[in-house]
Amino acid sequence: MNVKSRARIGAVVGTAALALGAMAAPASADPAPGNYRVLAGVGSDTTQDVVNGLGTAVDSGALIASYNALGTATVKTRATGCEIARPNGSSAGINALRNAVDNNTGCLDFARSSRGVADTSSTDLTWIPFGKDAVTFAVRSDSALPKALTKAQLVSVYTCQTTSLNGVALTPLLPQSGSGTRSFFLGQLGLTESTFGSCVDDTVQEHNGEALDSAGDIAPYSVAQYIAQSNAPGDVVDRRGASVLGSVNGVAPRNADGTLNTAFPFNRDVYNVVPTAKLTAPTIAATFVGSSSKVCAQSGVIATYGFGTIAGCGSTDLRGES
Image (cartoon, rainbow, N blue to C red; front, side, top):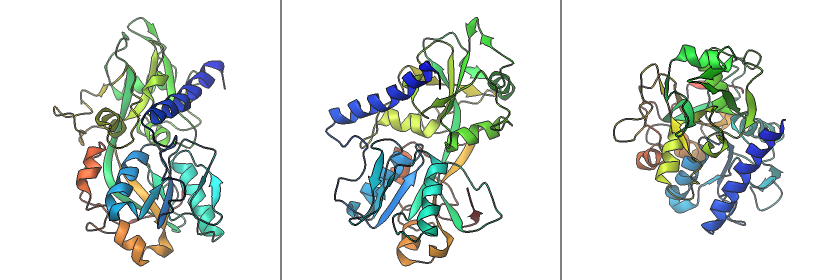
């Protein structure tokens, strides 16, 4: 990790903590200490805010506990035991859920994920979609970098073939390892963990526009997260800084009214992942499964946090492993 990378990560944690402290909220925006709800979940940074919002809206805040990707080193999800390392990102959350299932700890019931199934050879986990997101690139508003690029140009940037645009030297950024947004964005560009370029700084916390601290910085950004940070519902921290979202292949990431453009080229469903064996458990089923589930019924909350609604909300067709 280079010095600039350390500065970026420190800025993410420090800024978030200061902003939350100013609102007299816990630094990690987790359920209050001692508030152990029925279902506990961890994982994706992208969906942490909307699932926090669902946790407040559903059953008067008694059912869903969602623990943020950043905060204290550990989270405690049950009154007895269950103090676990805080997972940062989709993969880390899914791994923590699998560990809880494999060891029958009872510490976790679901994981937040901004990416789909990676391995269909096993069907131990089920990905249940509840909303639509899109991922585009962000640059600084005061930078001369273009605010519209093609997919081909982005591929060239992230393979280090294009090193400057409009006379500005580029610094391509990627989210931290394990991020669902990282894997999704690379996949949309036709790249992998082994084929993106050596010029890329891949240690940045996702969806943090304040990390774009120089004119040449360019980074993937969840459109829903950007909208949520603009709306600032609940305890959402506005981390946009000077960042602005760019268009890809001539398509804008947001509609004229500021909502998510679900026709954006790089769009994706977002999920809550649950153990397949528990799909028929009454509480899991009532909360996540089917279009009339408690989560899917909260379309207004989902929209407030920047996500689009989907026809397949609550479906249980996607099974596999991370």
